[in-house]
Length: 205
Image (tube, rainbow, N blue to C red; front, side):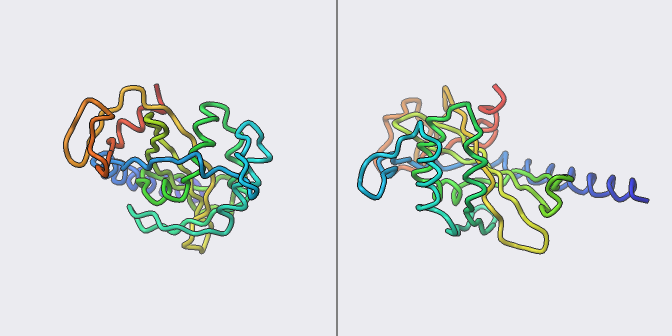
């Protein structure tokens, strides 16, 4: 009986993810232009991005208990101290990842829903962990952002879990509805976007 229940849940998840991934693959993430100058302490001094404790303190002061709504699927997300701690375990593109924090709320709001996994035995309180992909622009370079959001049982508000970044080396950009090869050629105010499949590939190369 238990085995049948597990298989049934897995089949439902696989079907759900096939549908959501197919939908996501038709979408483009709009680039959020990150302003690292926002990463300053209360006295106005720059946050030391190489210092994990300093980053955690800044994140708590800026985002703790803040809620945002993801435009793509309406998911409400709350930032938590626990999530900020999980982020610091990442070792790849750490500098870019920490600069992304300057506009973390906007990146979460503009991310695209991709799929989910069920909570495991170590995290029984997690009903689902949802994955989203977004896009950040830092000093003219484009980075894919992969976000994880935890949905606890019997709650509709999700909790920010962590994020990863991956540089997109040769982005196929769309500027305000038209393709242009030169990332610097777009008009001011143009919305720059990259397709979700291209962002996903940045994490597998």
